[in-house]
Length: 426
Image (tube, rainbow, N blue to C red; front, side, top):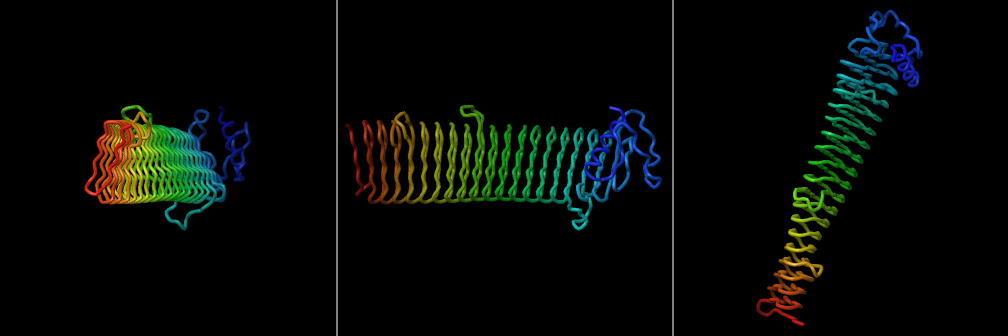
């Protein structure tokens, strides 16, 4: 593409933004006014060499190690190559584009908050060591390329970084932040954000509420603080930390693979947590939370009242500390334990389940091995019940007014003094 053609494209862009850069496609740019600092700039030695342009703060085209700065009403700044830097320091419809080599594009870089123009800014830096930054409101910021960084401070921002070093940061409200590959990092401070980091080594950190956070990659990490969040990590070695209430948290790996090892920690009330993987761990603190784990060798630990856990798979362990709680395991060689009053522990829900352990320590509680064989069931506390259906089960109830019962063959049923024991051998 010839130099005249490039200037024509820049002129068309400037006219579209209403900033008054006068060029015509296919013709060279008019020489700037004598007061312009670039009026004596030398012609390029090759078409498209470096380049710059500014407008409304003047500097209109400067080739050779491009820099373009503009600071006026509706300013544009475009810079293209080598040490390219484009700065448009605000104003209505501001646009700063820097594309290549050491590209940097920044809109508001002023030192104090009262200096910010606060207009509808658009910033693009695309390529090589690209950096794009904006400060104000209604910003659209994008950095594409290796070493990319995109930042926005304000509200109603859309921030995208798409590249090898991609990182996207927004500080404000109503932000959409995406860092979508390679070493992606997305960080948001505010509320009602949608955050996606999708790529190897993903990391998403969100502080606020009503956020939707998704990371999908190996070694993904998501940290969320706030209420009403939806958090999903889809890959193995994921780590999720959520603080707040009414959150919906999902971590997912490949069930049956030996190295899923997702870790999820939730602190708050009324949260929904689902873990899909192998050798994964969930740690929940709060009330009225629901935890579901699918896979083998998983561990769930829950502290609080009115919580529930459901585990599907083998060699899993669920432990709940709190009143009016329930834990259920489906599979074999699982362990379900509840400490608290008015609680329920169930193991062995289908006939093929075996080798499970269900235990309750609390008053008015129930421990049950519904079906299967070689299950262990015990209930400790006043007015508690332990039951098992199947063969070779061991059932124990201890405490005043407690009951132990078993239905099937070769079961062992024990209870303390003054308690009720039922053994049925059909």
